[in-house]
Length: 257
Image (tube, rainbow, N blue to C red; front, side, top):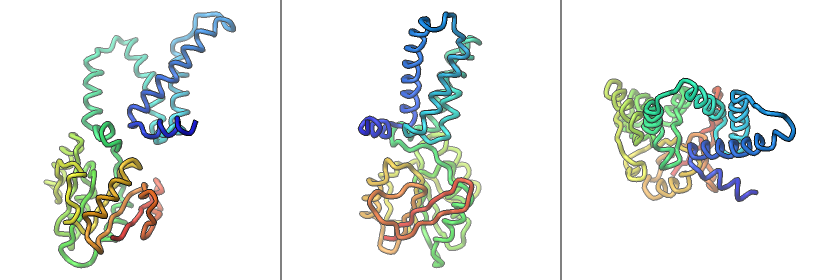
């Protein structure tokens, strides 16, 4: 059972969500097949769809999905049901899938969803910029560019960079930084040279942390700082741990090289 759970945890979130829906559908199909021995048909399709969504949502957190995925899991079968009732054009579904891929493509490849850093975390990051001039900041997986812009506005930060490969977040963050400061690069984080930066920040997922720490150790210079939002490096004691008093109850793991 433990091995099965670990298998689920390793799956990309979108694939795990679909697998959960399929498993629930299979159980529900079996239940409907046996139901005539207890309750005479017909059965309400609407009720079955709601049960499908509710059960999928209920078990999603336990099988490794972030708990906010419960709403997606609950609404997915209901949306498909109403789409069939309304004779929804499949081309719209294809367009919706393309949009999701453009937003969350990193979930498919690196198993890194689009996590956005909040204002409380950005203020905390600013406290770790050294008072010396010409400090260099890098956001690995910079999302919509909020951290890059925030750091670029500090007087002692001469270079504030972010790397992002998901197409829509990259385009939006590129426009944002052009207007407000900082630079975004369409670059794979594994090909980014970390030796240039004094502070490197990441809000990724548990999946890449061990590999990323190896890269940090190989490239970042002594005295520089690596900060991970929410996800600690496995087996490595942080220099400090900051628990923020925000709605998300953010925890920052700080590693001084």
